[in-house]
Image 1 (cartoon, rainbow, N blue to C red):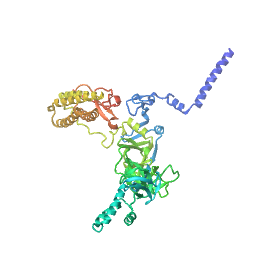
Image 2: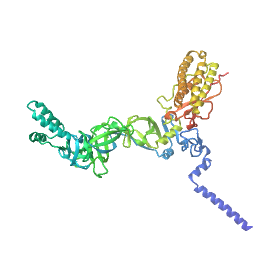
Image 3: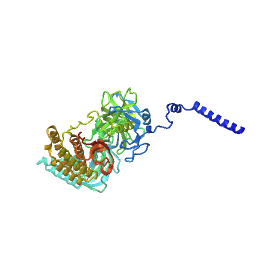
Image 4: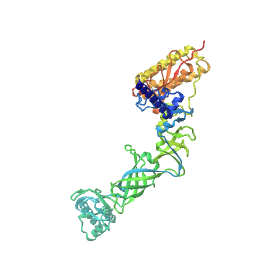
Length: 586
């Protein structure tokens, strides 16, 4: 019995000790939970919700991939709206998670752009020549026999046996016999020999001695390197036929290919420094002397030509070269923004600015106009000022958060301050007769057939549905409307006829979808103004239509069936709003 009492006392003492230790050494968070009566586990109401930046209708309580587009889900609670559609507030944790980094941009002096060019060495076409035979005949001997041999002007090249030359010499000797009677005859015979480039010395010797030469020596009319030998011993050649192709290589051309995007920065007189792998460590410099006015349609490049002195003979035709031109942009101050700060959205460019002196991290959406790329920067034309602090890392994460909050972003420009909301359609619903609203209901059914045809990417069905919508427009009794309501309907009617008619005559589904966008906007405004009778309609929105400009359409159900992409992105879109007619109070 005594032992039992000892055991019970020992257990009670141990329990008291453990309780005292817990009270003395518990964590501050546990103390707070105890003092406030809040459980240690996370409140279910504070569970992070994850969503898709492209499909905000997706919501789940754990990270993963979007079941529609398979993009990584992001926390919905990481960003909040400040009331300004152009600014986004983020938590410190979200900023750290996105690794947001910023840079203050400033003006710089004259800026330059390094343009790299590929090219090759070429012989100067103006210094190239063909050595021809001036008299017809048979080649008896060649003094230059191989390609690459250096030829000096006036050097002997070949011996030609020419029966025509023999005849011409005899004609001269005969003409000399009658020179007293007809001196012009002898002069004509001499001129014939001179046109064959017979040396004057040979003509004088012929007149003096009367000895006819059967062979004539061909002398080089110009110096250069033999690029090609075109005749051999024993060949019969005609007058003017080429014997050798010569090129003078003391000055060469350097031909570069410049892409059309760089041509605006290149001018004759620009200095180009170039190297060739054949001569490592050697750099050459020259100036652009000619820019080809025509672009090669296959390579989209234009040829640039420079000239260089090659008296040393180091450079040779067909050598590959790589050149660099430091193209000057403009003098004066230039505002540059880092490449990493720019989000490209087709024709638009977007940057995010850190809002100064904000209590919580706040970023502003800004559309900018950019100039050319200068190294790792872009030239700023419009939209930024010196001293602006732009986001250079994490801008895409900020933009995705803005999209989730229905704020200005790459894929959502409809909340821009400039024209932030389209002018509201007038509201004639209270005064619109029910019979006219019933006609709007019938018109919407014809519209839905057109929408379904585009969902199926059926161009023929869409054209037929466009004709049906036109018929529905013609059946509307506009006499039911009076005053401003009648005038508003007339404006909408004419515009809807135009776009429905273009759908009926369109040649392809792309054009039908373009006109369907305009028609949808008009019908949404019309139904907002007059209302409908019958079931509720929904306005749905695709943010990726027409190069991310976005587009709306009307549906009779909340399920997304995208008419702008069809099967390609059938489920892409969100329910944006609903169309309904308020019931009058009894």
